[in-house]
Amino acid sequence: MININDHEELRKLVGMYFDQQLDPPTQTAFLEKVDSDPDYQQAYQHELMIRSKIKKHIHRPVDSSQLVQAIKNQILKP
Amino acid sequence: MHDKTLKDKYDTLFEEELLPHVSALQTFAYHLTYNQEDADDLVQETYLKAYRFIDKYQKGTNAKAWLFKILKNAFINEYRKKSKQPSKVDFEEIVAYHDTDDHQITGYSDLREEIFLHMMGDEVTSAINSLPIDFRTVILLCDIEGFTYEEIAAIIDVPIGTVRSRLFRARNLLKEKLTKYALAHGYTDVRGQKRKSASSDETRHQEEE
Image 1 (tube, helix red, strand yellow):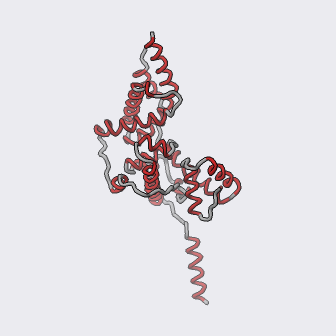
Image 2 (cartoon, rainbow over the protein chains, first blue to last red; image 1 turned 60 degrees about the vertical axis):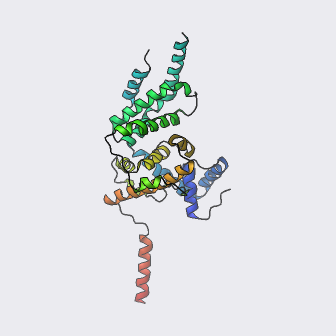
Image 3 (spheres, rainbow over the protein chains, first blue to last red; image 1 turned 180 degrees about the horizontal axis):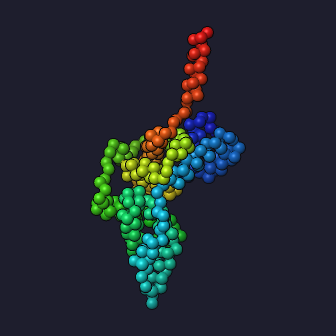
């Protein structure tokens, strides 16, 4: 059962959810609160958005196909 | 005949379960080595090692975590010695080795969306790359690759409490760096200004009375 009185605790709970640190019943209760409580919804959406932006702005290889082929050539020789 | 069947089995396992993670490993390797060529060499070496020990891998288990662990070990044991990049040791890196009781969980709730407005592409990568290696590693494994604390602990061989503590410090440092970058590029943090302005209006009003 989640009983949040304090904004700081809500932030911590949101962080734990995104870090997959909540046990299944707490996670279910948390998601129900996100659906019904605007404070929870706002905190959830904000965290989701920031984490997505960080992921989006990270350097990633444009194309891995050449490397995949090089590995295959080196390892999967007949 | 028996060897050929075994090789076919391992080759299939390799293609189906290990090769799909090349791109994720490249991203991780890039942020460890700072350049794509070295990153690709490190990934290739990781796959060579994985294939050499493929008989130890159990089909259907966590291939991604296994590969990340091999890559991390390869980086520490071999690549880092030959790397042209000098290893960065600073205060935070020293602190990271003395992880103690920072068992707090922190996310990004205090970071503003607006700070990303002026970012053109690689600012997040630069900010992550400027973190000490232990902090950089946990950010990449948790926030970019989505590993759990337990998986990260297994990949980097530290207790879960250390993962939590490093992540806490790493995120605080990353937020600081991203905010500094945004402020230098025209972002203004207006939080608290309304309150300040309302309070000064009130003071002015009282003085007038």
